[in-house]
Image (tube, helix red, strand yellow):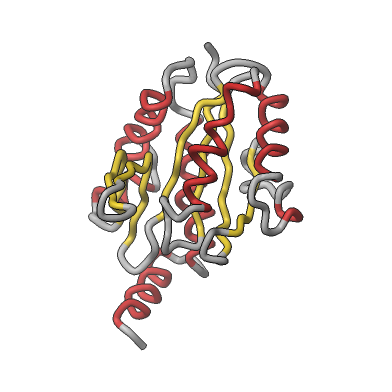
Length: 208
């Protein structure tokens, strides 16, 4: 067993998860859903809303705060990385536990008007497909902040647009991420290196 595999197995045993996928879904994504219940839900620009999540995950969330305080979990935001020798990108949120892949999350604001939502795919999903984000990872996430319009209408429109965007397995597009949050779904996309990535989508309303 390699050193990386040893760290991985040790992490699963210590944290009591069955797999990395189980950890991502039932630790990171569940913590985000829990945090949404506490934060200010007024509308704002993307970075300001994202920062509310970061603040709560670091200081109030009962699961992530404990892991961060004990130096088990690293939570980072606006993390800069090189795509190549020239191009650099910043990822919105990164979760990292030693032995596991970085779990990268991209955030976008969503609106009632569909023309304002092109960035969700073109500057979100596409960056995962083109390996600008999460190149070595099998899993990632996107969070949509609905700052105008009806949450149900925006959610279903987003789900439909994502389902037609570099799809690999259309059957997954109606799978909920968590039973605790109905405005969520999973999508699998074929990347430019012929590998698949599973993206978890969480859509949250923020009133303007």
